[in-house]
Length: 124
Length: 469
Image 1 (tube, one colour):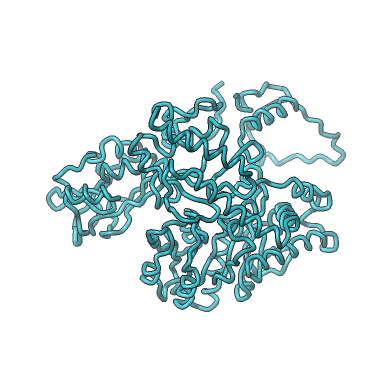
Image 2 (cartoon, helix red, strand yellow):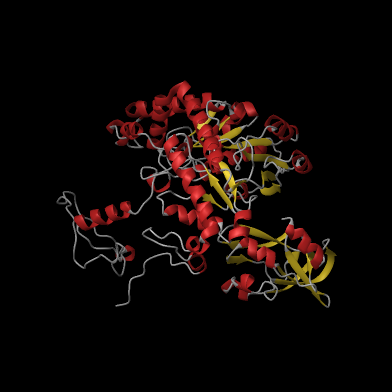
C-alpha cells in the first residue's frame, strides 16, 4: 500500500495537497482498497462552500456507499468531472485522480503526516 | 436462456377473449399511439414454458438453505397459502360495501389485536406495502406528533451507524436531518455518543433491537429514557423482531412506534414471491396520526396506500399467528436464537466471529484476517457457497464489520441442515489456503458463473431494446 510523503491525510481517509493557496483533495490508496471497485461518484458543484469535517459528496462501490469528508473549509473552485464517466480512476490511480480543489480556505481539519497515517491505517 | 422478447414470433398469439358484448367506443385520435407497443407475441404454451424455465433457475426457501442475514428467510407454511386462497378473501373487492366484507374486517382487527399483545402497542395500520414503506409511515407519525404540538424545532432523527440503510433514507424522505452516531466496540449504542447529540432539536431515534450484528442492546431502557427526556420519540425497526417475538415487547422497552415486516417475522412470502406487507404499530397517544383509507374510513388522515394495503398478506400472517399460538410464537423465536448460536459455534475455529458472545437470531463473521492471509474475500466465499446449493449470506453488512458475512438460519432449519452448512463453511475455509484461485472464479457449477458486477454497476443495461429494422 502506498502513502506518498508529500501529502497530508485525514482519519476519514482523504488526502490533501496544497498548490499555492488551493487545496487539492482525493481519497487514499487505503480508502480505495477498502471500498473495492468504485462504480459511482456524487460530487458538489464549482462555487459550493465546503466545511472542514463535513461531507462534500459520496462514492459508491460494489460494497457500499461512503461519504467523502472535506478536510478544509472554503469554496470549491474545481471538480474533477472526468470521474463521473470513469470512477474507476479512483481505484487505478488514487493519488492522481483528484476529486475537488478548494480555495479561500479559512479552516483546516487536524491532518496526519504520511507516517502517522500509515500507522493509523494499520489499526483500522 | 432467451428473454421473452427474443422468443416472440410476429403474429403468434393466444387470445381467447370472449366476444365483445358491450358497445364499442373509439378512442379520440389525440389519445392513440402512433405505433404499436413492442410487446412479445407468443402462444400460451410458450409463455408457460418460459416462466417454468425461470422458476427452475430461482433459489428460494423451498429449494434449499437460505441464511440471508437480516432478512429472516423462514419457510412459509402451506396452511397460510390455503387461508389466503379462500374465495371469500381472494375474491374480495376493495369497493365492496361494508356489510359484505365483515369477515375481512375481522381478519384485520384480529391480526391487530394479536400484534398489540406481541408488541405492547395500542394502535396499528396494515397499509404500508413493505418494510421501508412502514418505516416511512412510522416516522410520519413522529413528524405529525411534533407538528401538532407546534414543536417545529425538532428537525433531527438519530440513527446509529450499524442501522439498516433504509433508516437514514426514511428520516431524509420524511424531511428530517439525519444524525449518525458511532457504535460502542460491542456493536451496541454508545450512550455517551447518544447523550452528546440529544437536545431540543431531537425529533426521535430509530433503532433495531436486537441490532444488526445480532446483539440485544442491554442498555435499551436507558436509551429510550434518555431520548424521551430530551423530548424525542423512539422508533423500533422490527427487522429483527423474529429473535424476540413473544419473549420481550418493544412497547415495554420504551418504543413509541414500530414496524413489523410480515414477510420476515410472520412467514409471508418475500420479494418477488410477495407482495410484501408491513404492520405499523404505535402507542395510544400516536393513534390519531395513523393512516386511514379516505374511502373506507374517515377522511382527514394521511394515506400511504390504497384501501387496507396488501390484505391477503395479512391473512397469511394471521394464519401463522393462530397456528403457532401464544406458546408457539416465543418458541419459534427461541429456536431461531438457538439455531443461530449452534451454527455460529459449529463454524467457530475456522472463520473469525465478529463478536464472540451469545448472539440472538443472527451472527456476523469477520473475514478480514482470512482475506489478508489468503487473498480470498467475503465475496469469493459467498460465491463458492452457490456451488453447494446454498444461498449466500448477507455480504459486506453491517458496515461496521469489514469483510462481513451475516448469517441468519431461522427456526425452520433442522440440526442436519445446520451441520451440513457448517461443514461447508469449514471446508471453504480450508480451501482458501489451498486453492484461492479456484475460489476467485466461483461459482463453477451454477447456471451463471461470476457476472461482472462492476461493469453491470458502471454501465448497466436496464431493459431489452428492440433491434433496428
